[in-house]
Image (cartoon, rainbow, N blue to C red; front, side, top):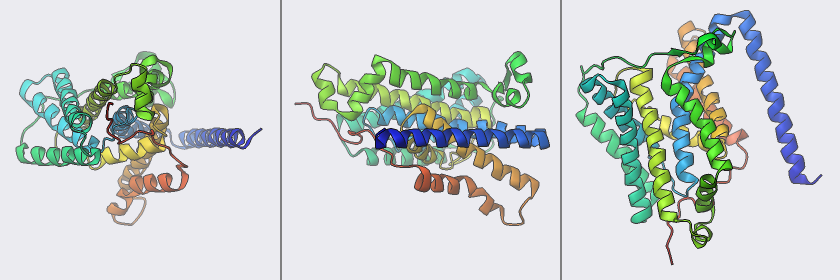
Length: 333
């Protein structure tokens, strides 16, 4: 057994051990207090939803070689447009589609600056963030109310399963869509020709070009589709989670999504696991504040999810290797 095989097997054993330990702790706490345990796990799923959607956007873009730090702005602008469309039309489906279209249009803007104009991709993403913050802050008016928000959909008898039933099978539609997208993109990315071409463009665009893959078209498609997914994350915030809009309500979730993407090694399932970790930390800090467990200012408890993200990335993330051509404009000979 060589060193690489040994390290991979050791990592697999460690992951399985930690998973079994975590499952045992969940079962133990469920036996002690099932109500609080289900509440924390349900909140974990909900808190992780915009994070994983943002991370999937990042994966779509960076696997094709385009750095997208504008996820925060895409989510914020989509949340605002979805909120306003719902307030005007009262139709939640149209509002969701409007939010996704907004994210896609901002993705098109990023693709135009990065692929066609070949500008610095970090600057392009920063422009989107600043643009979204400025426009939503200027046009938002207090007092506007929506015509309702998305309600949970109970999946029959599955929701009656102890512990996991209320957590996984009694959620609103965007939460279900986020979980489905994780597995769909995992399959498309690693089991289809489309995924192979996308990864080839992100790793070695010149080699991809020589075998007939259009690098520019591939990057455009992936960045726009990724933007639509980020738009769905923004729609989640105003149309499913809160039901209203507040200035800068994304609260850094787009940047956390980038950290989650890196921790998940640019894979949908890995990013989902990392987003669940962040969601769990967020659920726990909310529970601590609700219970008044610690006699310390709530601002310190509120730092827990972000502190945990930093610790995990710095100490346990390992060596994350991004796609080789990430951030590099492609010049066709």
